[in-house]
Amino acid sequence: MKIVFDTKGNEKQKECARAWVNDSITEIVYGGSKGSAKSFTGCSLIFGDALIYPNTQYFIARKNLNDLRKFTLPSIYEVMEKMDVNSEMFKYDGKDNFFTLYNQSKVFLLECRYLPSDPIFERFGSMQMTRGWIEEAGQITFNAKQNIHASIGRWKNDDYNLAGKLLMTCNPSKNFLYKEYYKPNKEGTLNKSSKFIQALPSDNKMLSRGYLDNLEKILSNNEKERLLKGNWEYDDNPFALCDYEAIISIFENRHVIKTGVKYITADVARYGSDRAVIFVWDGWVVIECITFDISSTTDLQNAINSLRTKHNIPANRCIADDDGVGGGVVDNCKILGFVNNSKAIDEPIQLGVAVKPNFKNLQAQCVFYFAQTVNDYGIFIECDMQEKFKEFIIEEIETIERKESEGTGTIEIMGKDSVKDKIGRSPDFRDALMMRKFFDLKPPLKAAKYSF
Picture 1: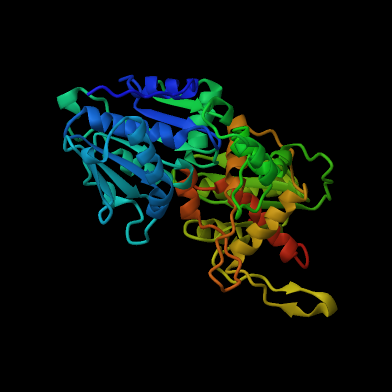
Picture 2: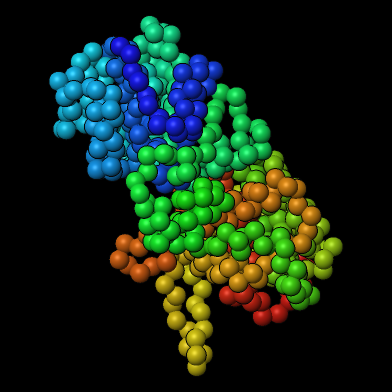
């Protein structure tokens, strides 16, 4: 069967189609804005293959199944009509959400949202698919993408000499797409088996009249940057607590004044479990940073004690996380311990009355107020950092998100496991930075004597 994919002059769609038939390319990221024909492209490629190769199997995945039903199904029917595929050549099972074509090929609609009963997406493990497409890939997690991708290339690929292939369509987002595809493509380091295609509304010759004008009127400046201009450096996450421009400025805020009062904050890890990070502060200026990819408790104790001596910092102005292996460092260095799940610190209000703050725990409290300091351009990282560490810090601060309220009014921050899933590592720099806020909330009453 011959299928015609008429792009109506859209060169980005043609580029995507060429990548789809290129056996050396196994992953394609297409999109970057509204109105760039993402859904039409995905439907055309998936159903084009399903019609050409009998008894093959494909998936169209999205975070929520209802969104596939509401927004992607109409595009599927539109593509079928454009391909002159009449209703007798396919059947949609609305109960189990899959299409069966006249040649026994199948296309499954899959939900990729996180389920507490299946945190690592094992439900995709037994699937056998020929190829697949993730719609709105910016909404799903890295683990979801990895596990559903593992199902590709397992059904009739050898029979037709078809390379396993995953298409991901998206708008700009600061999840794994930014790290794994957009940025490497920008830097010229993208893996040769991957293809990143930036598509904009101007590439789509079939946009209805007034569409762009209407978006210009209704979108915020942030949304215009992302959804019209395809700017991946902006983020429209409504739960994000830090402004992107303020985050970038932490390396440029030379107006932040050193106070002469110094502190040490440390996020502890041991023997390759995450990264250990130690910051030395003068007021809200980071003046020194030490990191360990692999470290022992002794290494960390020696580093902290050495920095205390070098900068003349008393023990009660030093803090390290007291969870897990960090407890040994805290005990042996005789410094303060930061317990993430401990209760929040009472905050004084007018007339000196202390009230119980509405934070879930100490970590949420310190992260929340640290985010305010970032947005107020009140932190300056002065010390010389490797370029990759700057990128890590920016990315980790961007993950500071308030969890959606469940009606309790409690301020809760997105947990470390969710952050790990989003960026592929623990937010060690962020955690070491946010501990500095502890000393603003609970300042030392007096300097403690050194105790080594």
